[in-house]
Image (cartoon, rainbow, N blue to C red; front, side):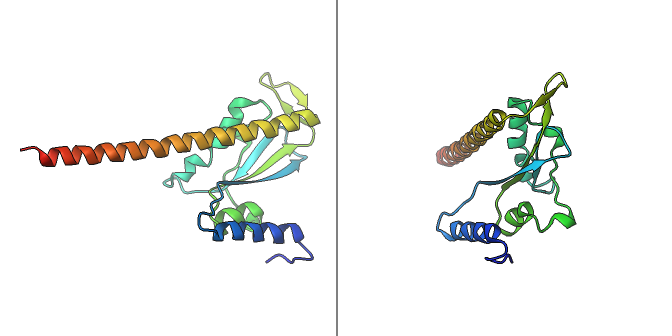
Length: 172
């Protein structure tokens, strides 16, 4: 466990997450850790690892895929959805595994540049980083709307099935 005096950011982040999870409806949809990257170009994500039979295997890739469709700054094919053994102490591993946060990412942004659609090098500016944050927020909102629509569809389907069963059991 992190020390309050040696690792205050980690200590208090874990405390806040624990408190939210302890609330009656305390759910955390996503947690995104922002980092700078000096080796690769573009913006990309490290995400949680799920087995292929788990629906989260695909769902965990939707936000990064939406980002890649909205901006050249983000590169989906640079994303990694795996947590290696030596990465088990990272916040990505701890918050996804220990706290059950389904959408946990480390967003890595190049300190310098990215490739555009023509593979030309473009340089990041403060305004482009702000724009990237706005696009990320928009993609999270879009994904939440998709999930809400899916939940509504499931409820409507269940109600239709219930009506069908009731109707067929009442017929002679």
